[in-house]
Image (cartoon, one colour):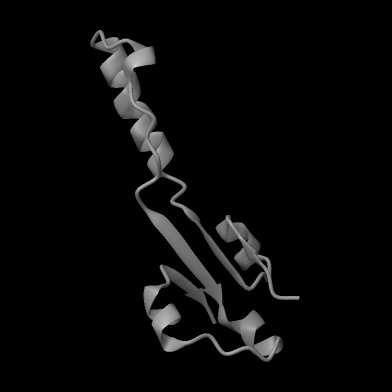
Length: 83
């Protein structure tokens, strides 16, 4: 059954595709927030920040096994493909 998950490890283990926030970005943003707090900012006044970068990972091998064809426009947007 075709499925989409948020994490890339799903695709590495045979899943069809994943689409979710970049894994490293939250840590980088966390470091920026810690820096602001250490410089005197009040944590309650820091804004809620949503992910800016999203990753699309496709498993073309799984798509082929399921008899699915991923359109070229979708393939072009993928950050990573597994053949």
